Length: 424
Ligand SMILES: C[S@@+](CC[C@H](N)C(=O)[O-])C[C@H]1O[C@@H](n2cnc3c(N)ncnc32)[C@H](O)[C@@H]1O
Image (cartoon, rainbow, N blue to C red):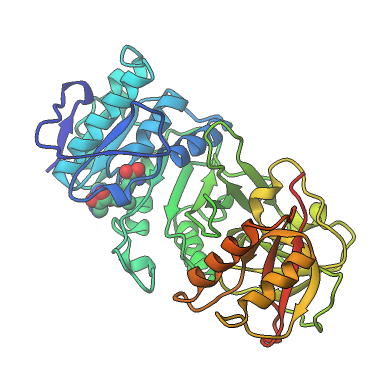
């Protein structure tokens, strides 16, 4: 059974999960239902994504999201692409939240009188049943311009296996294939997947896609909002893929006023290996963005920021990939966003840092005119704040003028005190 919700006629009564999205402009809050907030795409990511989809020419027809949740991504597509929206959601209250959000976002964008908004609908029902969904529309409106799918995944999933996704990819793609607007170009599809999918699972996704559209062009996109995490992993297919890129990395800045960093490549990613060398004063240590590393685009970024240098990776796993190199990085524009810390090694600390030895580090830091030293290695979580607090307190009162950090050398018994390269 499917039920139509017309956004301008859907009241918000009964929706109690109104939440502010800190990435959305002031005055824009979203309704959710059945604890839908954690599932919703943050507004800034949804809007940036819509802007990149807008760089492609879509055929006429509906922008379809067949598991639209609270409708945040769907509404962002409407505001940017200005094409009619069709959202399908199984959970009744969430479908209602989608309709209300769509209306609120269209009002915010002063678009409630536009043709695209007047045609936009939310359908409460099963997104794997196109016949049921399309029977709610008039005959002349039934073609699909673009399909977005962000399937639900169990919270706390350990495996992130494809079978856990609801609705399942293969059912959605196979069912909707006949309903795309027939145009010269390949169908335009965006699959918003678990950011934790490993290479083998990405290959499984590609196999499912190839079953439906053999050989369709594709671009994988890793999106990060910082903290070294991949926030979204998406596969852009056919009409919205980038023919010059098989992989893309997007670092979303904290301020919506700034442009994201976008890197892309069409070349096969070469494996990177750890290369351990003895600790050395005078070499440079950079702790870089773990999400950039995961996207496979680190080597490309280093071609410009560490041009002509043979870097040596001390750590590749975890939240702090650490590169050792011979000269400072050449950072331009927003490059700093991809650097947790970079600096020159000025001391090799051959003692382990604890409450008894922290004063020794303070004295060494002062001798290098440091006004702050951040601990950039994995420490016992109960010790970290104590030691960092002690360093901050003691160094603040001295007359240092440089920033520094401590990194771990892979020979576990050596720490590296580094003086930061100042931001350009
Ligand atoms: C991750 S959420 C989508 C969030 C959305 N992108 C947003 O920005 O709010 C996935 C949604 O798929 C819905 N769902 C699961 N199976 C479905 C099905 N067969 N048909 C329609 N929706 C379904 C779930 O109820 C859930 O709300």
